[in-house]
Image 1: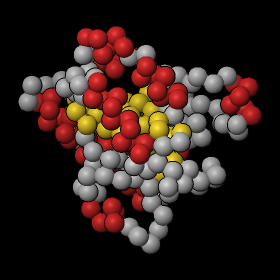
Image 2: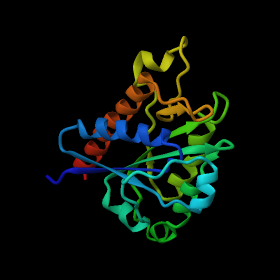
Image 3: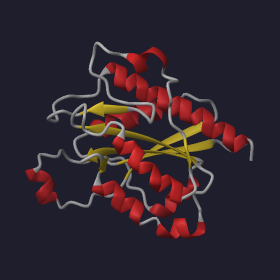
Length: 204
């Protein structure tokens, strides 16, 4: 049987979402018969503006186009929040998927969400919640992690991003990096999602 292809597609301005994406890829790739690949969506801001915002140079992860999405058997989508919603760069990418929507080329494919916010009240649940509409219009199957991460979901002593919707982190002023627990949750999401994507592909 052909391998199950899981695409981890993300936008990351300061690197926090990218760190989660890397761990998610490791988790997905740990499932036998699964090929996981990282993709970035195109940047919409000019270099001059990014420079003024203190954004570091982008990594060498390839840039995806909408037409490459149907190749995947499952999609994990990651982005930072902007006022409780997905960042405009990722929304612009999804806005360009009208052709795929028209043919329902992504219908029936599983999809998950991961994210980064600036603070604890900054959108850890509203960001993925408001993003589900994008999946619905494409006919995709939303795969949350629920509470499958176990005790890590109930951590109360340390600040921890993420929710039943998916893995998450807090960027703070930009200096805070994903913690070991947040990265472990990201790995778990990749593995859990890949197992489900593999089952769905095998049942077709």
